[in-house]
Length: 181
Image (cartoon, rainbow, N blue to C red; front, side, top):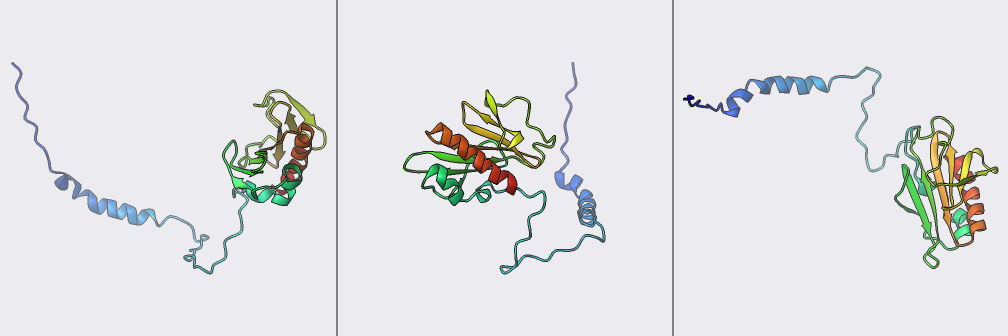
Protein backbone atom coordinates (compact mmCIF):
# COMPACT_ATOMS: atom_id res chain seq x y z
CA UNK A 1 0.00 0.00 0.00
CA UNK A 2 1.28 3.37 -0.94
CA UNK A 3 1.71 5.93 1.71
CA UNK A 4 -0.25 9.12 1.49
CA UNK A 5 1.97 12.10 1.04
CA UNK A 6 0.93 15.21 2.83
CA UNK A 7 1.59 18.41 0.90
CA UNK A 8 2.37 21.47 2.81
CA UNK A 9 1.90 24.88 1.40
CA UNK A 10 4.31 27.65 2.04
CA UNK A 11 2.62 31.03 2.02
CA UNK A 12 3.71 33.18 -0.91
CA UNK A 13 4.51 36.05 1.38
CA UNK A 14 7.19 34.04 3.20
CA UNK A 15 8.96 33.04 -0.05
CA UNK A 16 8.56 36.40 -1.76
CA UNK A 17 9.85 38.51 1.12
CA UNK A 18 13.57 37.85 0.42
CA UNK A 19 12.99 38.63 -3.27
CA UNK A 20 11.51 42.07 -2.72
CA UNK A 21 14.80 43.83 -1.91
CA UNK A 22 16.55 42.02 -4.77
CA UNK A 23 13.87 43.06 -7.26
CA UNK A 24 13.94 46.63 -6.01
CA UNK A 25 17.71 46.81 -6.57
CA UNK A 26 17.45 45.24 -10.03
CA UNK A 27 14.75 47.66 -11.08
CA UNK A 28 16.69 50.64 -9.80
CA UNK A 29 19.93 49.59 -11.51
CA UNK A 30 18.17 48.55 -14.73
CA UNK A 31 17.31 52.14 -15.53
CA UNK A 32 20.87 53.31 -15.09
CA UNK A 33 22.29 51.84 -18.31
CA UNK A 34 23.24 54.29 -21.01
CA UNK A 35 26.08 56.49 -22.04
CA UNK A 36 27.08 60.01 -21.29
CA UNK A 37 26.33 60.80 -24.95
CA UNK A 38 22.63 60.32 -24.35
CA UNK A 39 20.85 63.49 -23.35
CA UNK A 40 17.91 63.64 -21.03
CA UNK A 41 14.92 64.94 -22.94
CA UNK A 42 12.60 67.35 -21.19
CA UNK A 43 8.92 66.56 -21.13
CA UNK A 44 7.06 67.96 -24.11
CA UNK A 45 4.96 71.03 -23.50
CA UNK A 46 1.87 72.14 -25.36
CA UNK A 47 3.93 74.74 -27.20
CA UNK A 48 6.80 72.46 -28.22
CA UNK A 49 7.48 71.82 -31.89
CA UNK A 50 7.29 68.26 -33.17
CA UNK A 51 10.69 66.75 -33.93
CA UNK A 52 11.73 66.36 -37.56
CA UNK A 53 11.10 62.98 -39.11
CA UNK A 54 13.96 60.58 -38.77
CA UNK A 55 15.22 58.53 -41.71
CA UNK A 56 13.40 55.53 -40.21
CA UNK A 57 10.12 57.40 -39.82
CA UNK A 58 7.05 55.96 -41.49
CA UNK A 59 5.77 57.66 -44.62
CA UNK A 60 2.17 58.88 -44.52
CA UNK A 61 0.77 57.88 -47.92
CA UNK A 62 -1.98 60.51 -47.60
CA UNK A 63 0.65 63.26 -47.53
CA UNK A 64 2.60 61.99 -50.55
CA UNK A 65 -0.02 63.04 -53.12
CA UNK A 66 -2.43 65.94 -52.98
CA UNK A 67 -6.10 65.89 -53.89
CA UNK A 68 -5.28 68.34 -56.71
CA UNK A 69 -2.82 65.82 -58.19
CA UNK A 70 -5.32 62.98 -57.98
CA UNK A 71 -8.28 65.04 -59.30
CA UNK A 72 -7.41 64.88 -63.06
CA UNK A 73 -7.75 61.08 -62.96
CA UNK A 74 -10.58 60.76 -60.49
CA UNK A 75 -12.64 63.93 -60.57
CA UNK A 76 -13.96 65.17 -57.23
CA UNK A 77 -12.24 63.45 -54.31
CA UNK A 78 -12.67 63.16 -50.57
CA UNK A 79 -9.12 64.47 -50.07
CA UNK A 80 -7.62 61.06 -49.30
CA UNK A 81 -8.25 58.86 -46.28
CA UNK A 82 -6.05 56.26 -44.57
CA UNK A 83 -7.00 52.82 -45.79
CA UNK A 84 -5.89 49.23 -45.43
CA UNK A 85 -3.97 46.87 -47.67
CA UNK A 86 -0.41 45.84 -48.38
CA UNK A 87 2.16 48.33 -47.15
CA UNK A 88 3.26 50.37 -44.18
CA UNK A 89 0.90 53.20 -45.10
CA UNK A 90 -2.07 53.11 -47.46
CA UNK A 91 -4.21 56.03 -48.59
CA UNK A 92 -7.30 56.03 -50.76
CA UNK A 93 -8.90 58.95 -52.59
CA UNK A 94 -12.52 58.32 -53.54
CA UNK A 95 -15.02 59.95 -55.86
CA UNK A 96 -18.31 59.38 -54.04
CA UNK A 97 -20.35 60.05 -57.18
CA UNK A 98 -18.67 57.41 -59.35
CA UNK A 99 -17.19 55.10 -56.67
CA UNK A 100 -13.87 55.30 -58.55
CA UNK A 101 -10.74 55.36 -56.41
CA UNK A 102 -7.01 56.01 -56.38
CA UNK A 103 -5.01 54.00 -53.85
CA UNK A 104 -1.37 54.56 -52.91
CA UNK A 105 0.46 51.94 -50.85
CA UNK A 106 3.89 52.72 -49.43
CA UNK A 107 5.94 49.77 -48.27
CA UNK A 108 8.07 49.86 -45.15
CA UNK A 109 11.72 50.86 -45.18
CA UNK A 110 13.83 48.00 -46.53
CA UNK A 111 10.98 46.18 -48.32
CA UNK A 112 12.91 46.66 -51.57
CA UNK A 113 16.45 46.65 -50.18
CA UNK A 114 17.73 44.76 -53.24
CA UNK A 115 16.74 47.66 -55.48
CA UNK A 116 14.66 45.31 -57.62
CA UNK A 117 11.07 44.20 -57.79
CA UNK A 118 10.36 40.60 -56.84
CA UNK A 119 10.69 38.44 -59.97
CA UNK A 120 7.01 37.54 -59.98
CA UNK A 121 4.14 39.90 -59.34
CA UNK A 122 1.39 38.86 -56.93
CA UNK A 123 -1.02 40.38 -59.47
CA UNK A 124 -0.32 38.00 -62.36
CA UNK A 125 0.49 39.21 -65.85
CA UNK A 126 2.41 42.48 -65.94
CA UNK A 127 3.93 44.72 -68.56
CA UNK A 128 6.96 47.02 -68.35
CA UNK A 129 6.51 50.72 -67.64
CA UNK A 130 9.25 52.35 -69.74
CA UNK A 131 8.31 55.80 -68.42
CA UNK A 132 9.48 54.72 -64.95
CA UNK A 133 12.31 52.35 -65.86
CA UNK A 134 13.13 48.83 -64.70
CA UNK A 135 11.86 49.37 -61.17
CA UNK A 136 8.20 49.51 -62.19
CA UNK A 137 5.62 47.22 -63.80
CA UNK A 138 1.90 47.45 -64.52
CA UNK A 139 -0.55 44.67 -63.74
CA UNK A 140 -2.76 44.39 -66.78
CA UNK A 141 -5.66 42.63 -65.05
CA UNK A 142 -5.74 44.58 -61.79
CA UNK A 143 -4.52 47.97 -63.00
CA UNK A 144 -1.94 48.14 -60.22
CA UNK A 145 1.40 49.78 -60.88
CA UNK A 146 4.16 48.34 -58.70
CA UNK A 147 7.21 50.58 -58.29
CA UNK A 148 10.22 51.14 -56.08
CA UNK A 149 10.81 54.36 -54.18
CA UNK A 150 14.28 54.15 -52.69
CA UNK A 151 14.31 50.93 -50.69
CA UNK A 152 10.51 50.78 -50.41
CA UNK A 153 8.18 48.57 -52.44
CA UNK A 154 5.14 50.68 -53.40
CA UNK A 155 1.95 50.44 -55.45
CA UNK A 156 -0.59 52.78 -56.97
CA UNK A 157 -3.93 51.89 -58.48
CA UNK A 158 -6.21 54.23 -60.38
CA UNK A 159 -9.48 52.30 -60.37
CA UNK A 160 -11.53 54.05 -63.05
CA UNK A 161 -13.61 52.65 -65.91
CA UNK A 162 -11.37 54.10 -68.65
CA UNK A 163 -8.41 51.67 -68.70
CA UNK A 164 -6.14 54.05 -70.67
CA UNK A 165 -6.84 56.81 -68.16
CA UNK A 166 -6.15 54.34 -65.34
CA UNK A 167 -2.71 53.47 -66.73
CA UNK A 168 -1.80 57.10 -67.51
CA UNK A 169 -2.90 58.13 -64.02
CA UNK A 170 -0.99 55.32 -62.34
CA UNK A 171 2.21 56.26 -64.20
CA UNK A 172 1.87 59.98 -63.43
CA UNK A 173 1.04 59.44 -59.75
CA UNK A 174 3.75 56.80 -59.26
CA UNK A 175 6.31 59.21 -60.72
CA UNK A 176 5.25 61.92 -58.25
CA UNK A 177 5.18 59.50 -55.31
CA UNK A 178 8.54 57.93 -56.17
CA UNK A 179 10.21 61.33 -56.24
CA UNK A 180 8.76 62.27 -52.81
CA UNK A 181 9.24 59.09 -50.82
